[in-house]
Image (cartoon, rainbow, N blue to C red; front, side, top):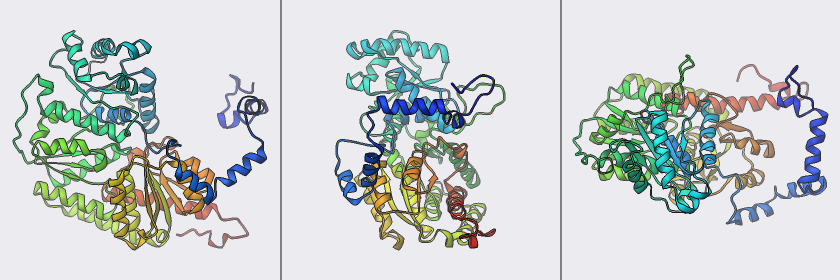
Length: 518
């Protein structure tokens, strides 16, 4: 073969060598039941037509490339936001390998998570023994301060009772009786990663506020003037959490970030391995019951959690991944109202700088059509910002969006003349979006790394905002919330617009507008 130890070739060059090309062609011919190139081209062109789109949108039992992941992924995300907490997934090792790798590819950091290693015998007889041994091993080997248990499909199909299993494991001495073990049932065959996040956060709230599963008394709320902040499942958690803390510090308010995973996915390279880093302390998680209110930046990601918090007597407020002027204004005004703290001049100046930046660049974005895909709250936040910029969020696709989300998007679009020809698509996937991009083309698309296949197929330029961003580095370190975060989003959009203008210029033909100044 072409590869050898004397001269290691990058895969871009390696797979272009004759022997690899021959091998791949033989695989296609002999094992893939391939049709002729003529037939392939015919069908490919047919899938770009309105006739195919009608058939595509009529399908009910098949999902093709959904813009979502499964529940336990969100549960792991929630768990690592707490001090020395080890996510423990009751299920197979293969599932947990997916969660670890998915986060590591986005954040470029290791993600610690263990499994109860259920196999065929556990699927038949139940996973109690796996839970007993797994909790004992996790506690002894990794020395966490808390273990957060969630489930995969296997455990849910056979009906394993996490509460009973955890109590049984404690009775067997796997972990001390008063050791913090939270749990959430997170069946991967329903909902999505935002559902799993919500279930896990709800379980953590109940554990600390309702008496640690019966081992301590239920806490009595005594308002202390602080607020709680929940970010939701957010691919920009590293940059966003630090931006929110900066804004809160400028406002001189007392706060608890409920689930702060900004440090564990941004550890320094200083010679020390940190299996756990940062996170909300367990003491703060318990004391969060005394806050005057809780703010969630993602309504559709925290529905059950906020309902549980409200049932404990706290005021709750939810936003939809606020990006832009109006979204940030509303968020800061609500923080000010809850805490009684004014918005300082330093933050007001940041708002003015964003207004100035929008004024500088509006002409380049005005009237451009965009397709957006991703989580429900992210889609709402991006759509609202695009409307502020005078752009048209033409196709808004959230595979894990529901009817309530669709109605909220409809109301947002109706509030602006730029939303007149735009539509929300709850429950649709990226293959549906592909049809839309062919039959109703747009200028740009905003979404995760998975949009690069649509970019290649439909020639619609992709602006990478969302989760996961696996083929670019360090996006998660920059905020997209607040006025500064909104400026980052504005710059991303403008850079892509200008890159496309320059890319399409051919020297000597249409380079009259190959400008130095934009």
